[in-house]
Amino acid sequence: MGNVPTTVKHCLSYRQIIEEYPWFRSWLQEEKEIVPTRVKIQLIDMLSTTGLSVIEATSFVSSKWVPQMADHADVVKGIQRVPHVRYPVLTPNIQGFQDAVAAGATEVAVFGSASETFSRRNINCSISESMLRFEEVISAAKDRQIPVRGYVSCALGCPHEGRIEPSQVAEVAKKLYEMGCYEISLGDTIGVGTPGSMFKLLQKVMNDVPISALAVHCHDTYGQALPNILTALQMGVSVVDSAVAGLGGCPYAQGSSGNVSTEDVLYMLHGMGIGTGVNLDKVIETGDFICNALGRRTNSKVAQARNRTL
Amino acid sequence: ALPQTVKIVEVGPRDGLQNEKTIVPTEAKINLINMLSESGLPVIEATSFVSPKWVPQMADQVEVMKGIRKKPGVSYPVLTPNLKGFQAAVSAGASEVAIFGAASELFSKKNINCSVEESLQRFEEVMKAAKEAAVPVRGYVSCVVGCPYEGQVAPEKVAHVAKRLYSMGCYEISLGDTIGVGTPGSMTKMLEAVTKEVPVSALAVHCHDTYGQALANILIALQMGISVVDSSVAGLGGCPYAQGASGNVATEDVVYMLHGLGIETGVDLSKLMDAGAFICRTINRKTSSKVAQATCKL
Image (cartoon, rainbow over the protein chains, first blue to last red):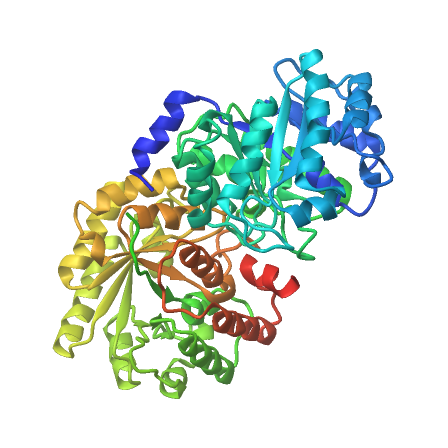
C-alpha cells in the first residue's frame, strides 16, 4: 500500500484541490416522495456557496423511468450558476442529451456498467449496446465542445452477478475514456468493496486510464467507503464523489445506507491536510436544510456529532 | 506491508455495555460473552472491577467472571482501576487485567479524579501485585488524538504516557481515540511519536467512530505496523461526550475490512453477527454495524 505520508504528499503536489462531486442526483433518485422543484433548486444553490466545484444537478432520463427527475429542465433553468462551478447532468442517450442542451446544460455524464446483468436490468441493454448509445452522445457533445464524464457502475461487485473482475471494469473504463470521456468515475454500487479489492481494481484500471482521469464513487453500505477512498488517494486518485448528508439509500439492500456523506469525506481530507476549497460548516448547514425538507435524519456522522456535542 | 494477522480485542461486554443506558441482566452478559467466544475472537474484555457506585452496569462483575464459559486459548481481561479492584478481580478468577491512563490532564481529573502522574502511581501498585501473581496487564491511553476538554493533545504527551505504562510492565498499550475526532492525518503524527518510545508490536488502536473515521484510522495504523485492533460488537457503546452520537467502531465492520484485505483474524463473521443480533435484541437497540444492517436486508 505504500508509505502513507509520501503518498499523501504526492496527492498534494499533483492536485491541490480534491474535487468533490456531491451526488445529489443519485440520492434524490432514491427518495420515494417527489421533492418539489424549488427545494431541489435551493439545495443546489446552497451547495454552490460551499466551495464545491462540481454539482451533479439532475438527470435527463425519461420521467416514465425516474419520476423524481421529471423536472430536469426546470431545475437546470432555475439554478443560480456560480462562476467556476460546474453542473453536469446525466444523459443516457441522444434524446436526453438534446433535451439537456436545450435546457442550458454545459456538461453531461453517461453511465455504463461493468456487469452485463446490471446493464440489462438497469438500462435495458447490453454493455456493448450502451456503448453505442454513449458514442452518439459523446459525438454530439464533441461537436458542441461539451465535456462528458463517464461512470462505471458495479466496479467492485454486482447485486446480480456477485464478483466483478477488475479486467471487466478496466475494459469499460478504457472504452469510455477512448471514446472521449474526460474522466471516469468508478462506482462501488453496492458498497461491498474493501481496501483490498479497491487496490486491485485501481492497479488494473490504471494500466488503461491515466490516474489523473479517474475518480472513485464509493458507497458506504458496509461502512467501507472512507477506507476505500483513503486507499484510492494513496494510489494517486484525486477526485472523489460523495453526497451531502449521505442521503440516498441502497436500492439493493432495503434500509441500508448508500452514498458516502460529503461531510465525512471532507472531515477526513481536511484532517489529512488535503485542500478541497470546501467549507465544511456550510456543507453541514446544507445537509441540515435538505434533511429538514425531507423529514429525514442525516447519514453523516460528522453532522450527527456536531449537532450533539455537549 | 500490512500484517498477515490481526488480533481483535473485543470490548463490547465492557466498554460497549458500560456506555449503554439499559442495564443488561447478568444472564444476558454471560450469554453474549459465550457467543463471542464461539465466534473465534481471541480476546474478550469481560467486565470492570470499578465500584458499582460509579458504574452500575458493571455491578455484577463477580457473577459475570464466574459465570462465563472460558474457551481455551481465549483471554478475558478485566478493568482494574486500583489495587482493590485488582484483588477482587483475581479472587473472581480473572487471569488478565487492564489499567486505564489518559494523555490529557483535564480528562484524567474529570474521569478518575486525579492527575495523570497520580494515576500512574496508583497503577504501579497494581503492576506490582500483578507481577507477583503473574497476571499480564494491558495499558490503555485515552484521548490520544483529542480531548473533550483540552481539545488538541500533543503526540509527545501520548508517547510519554504510553512509555510509562510500557516501562511499568504493561505487555500491550491500547491507544484510544476517545471522542473519535482523529483522522489519518492526526493518527499518523501520534503513531510516529509513540512508536519512537514503544515497539509497534506492543501497540493497539482503539478507534471511535463518532466522526465516521474509525476504519480509515485503523487502516492507517495497520499500514504503520499495528496488528492489534479494539472494537465492539454491533458498535455498542455510544459517545458520552456527544449525546446520541456513535462511539465504538463495530467489530463486524472491522472484520469485514480485514478479511477483504486478506488479513486473518480467526473470527467467523456470521457467528459474530449472531452475537451482535442477540445483544441488540436484548437491549432493544438497533445495531450500529453497517455490515450487520446490510446483510440482514439483502
